[in-house]
Amino acid sequence: MKNSINIKNRKAKFNYEFLDKYTAGIKLAGTEIKAIREGKANIAESFCEFNNHELFVINMHVEEYSHATHFNHNPKSERKLLLQRRELRKLEKEVTNSGLTIIPLRLFINDRGLAKLQIALAKGKKLYDKRETIKDRENKRRLDRIQKDYK
Image (cartoon, rainbow, N blue to C red; front, side, top):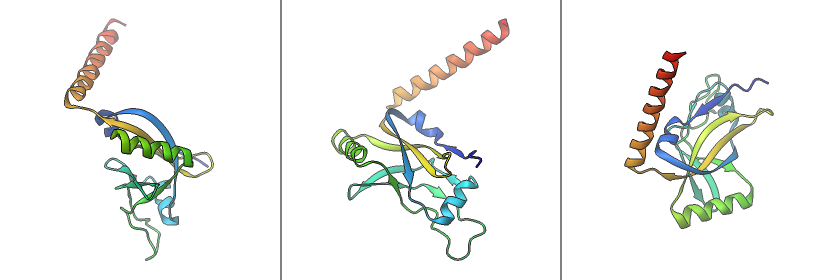
């Protein structure tokens, strides 16, 4: 099976500092996984939240499957994330005690054909951190141009 689906959250790296990364499974309906395999998903505005000691991804948009009948899924519904119990307890403790957040980074299909979501325990960046990130990116780009001219 060709697993070329790799949907990334490009804003996350700019807005957050990642502390720890996890790979979680997602509980999906049949039409949801088919739409994801077509690449019709978006995780740019999504975040993760605990509800009764279970982790859910909120605001993840999966378009309706084009070949489905009236039994199609809701595009913006909450989807349960599947992690080991000790990982869930650790994440919940970190989120409640230290005010960190859980952000989805990447949605992909693994070798077995299952949808996985790479999530990160993250801390929000301040405005001056974002400015520093932009400055570093521009300096790197400038150095690459100078090196290219001398080759």
